[in-house]
Length: 289
Length: 255
Ligand SMILES: Nc1ncnc2c1ncn2[C@@H]1O[C@H](COP(=O)(O)OP(=O)(O)OP(=O)(O)O)[C@@H](O)[C@H]1O
Ligand SMILES: [Mg+2]
Image (cartoon, rainbow over all chains, first blue to last red; front, side, top):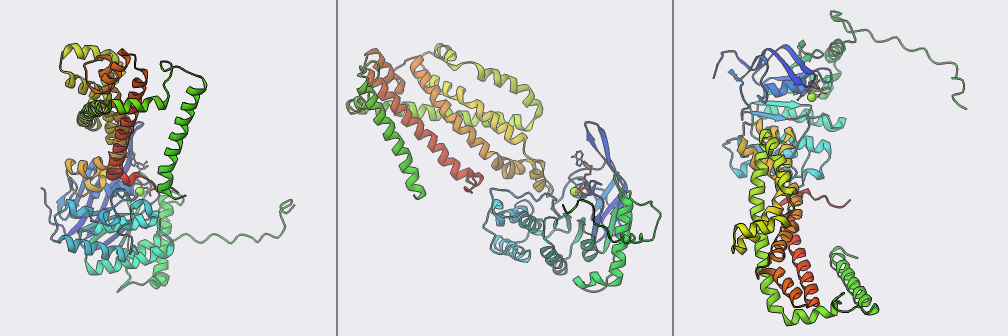
């Protein structure tokens, strides 16, 4: 195994990847470089279809990039490894197992110092944390989409991975549950540090959770913009309304628009809000009849 | 009406109604025995030949089950090969389809000649040949259509192909497998009887049927038909029972 003395936990070097399709190669990633230090939290945002899920599959070793390298833990990634935890965009749970058995699944593959009883206790603890108390013995078909996502989140961290890769794990959740889980994530990181790569389409989520937000450009994607989130101390949801956060959100929003190709790049300042529409004074003819 | 009461009552009611109608129709049309036996004609046959019915049923039963068991083993094996290798699938599929298309009634005399006197073996062989196709196809389709997302759960942790097969692919295919097994059990049963009747060798319910035919005992022939039906129902529900145990999770509770 090739080793390298950089101190980054996740590092992508000029990664280029294309899918083979019937209509020829579809370039998805183009010269993407990215660095995530140990125990830090990296959020990745970008337009839909730009290659975010592809990125997670490359980092986890499920696929190999056409060009460039992916490094994890200072070793070159050539195949999946048990020190990684992954929650997929589509939270597939095994229908023939209970939620508890689903959460415990990784421990059947990965060697762990935990005893069976400890593992079960940890599973129950995690289920409590994500608000699934009392659902351990239920089948996946008895859960809602958002609940399944939360169960899949528990499954991804049950074996205490060093690197956690989450692909839009809160996508199917209502705003309140989502904010609860954001705080849960912070608590978890405090209790057991891990390096995290989170894919999301929620800019507030990225700013609240991450130390670093990477904006991906449109397809084929590279890292278009990297924002260091400097909110000191323990974060609370109120921090999102502080002027500094509002400013960061505006920057990110602008960068996303650039990525979507709606605004010319190079235009560094956040775009000014559109002028207010003139109030409609005349009734539209025939609208009320 | 509660659930279990209905499950017992409904079929009983229908069976009684059909038998009553049958009895009435035979009596009303004054049909002679050799045109149509009535249910009341059958009871004396069961009483007279009860020991034969038991022995012959057992012969038919065990040969069907052995043939089916072989079909499960070989069918699953073929299904696995075709499910995992596209090359094997594309190569084997047309052969299996052709093999399945041959009417087994034409194979019976050939097999009977090939293995002269090996009656049990021949019967099991026909039961196996007729029933293994649906199993092979269902297993291969189940495995080859397994969504990659399912594999990825374990693959992302560095699990081996064998582990993925045992923990994901196999359980995931069980509902399809049991669907095919329900078809296969009936087919195997038909196969056994085909052998017993087309190439009579003095064993199984087919033999009892044959002796009914030879001695012009028409009610006996009808009595055998009913015994066959009962055996068929028994076999089918054994499979349903196994399905409940091993693939019960796939059953949605009624909405
Ligand atoms: N297995 C595949 N074969 C061919 N093309 C694929 C495959 N998977 C993804 N793609 C294509 O690659 C592009 C990037 O896909 P990807 O799933 O990485 O996007 P994404 O950024 O995760 O999108 P979203 O935000 O909607 O989840 C898409 O245009 C998609 O059509
Ligand atoms: Mg995606």
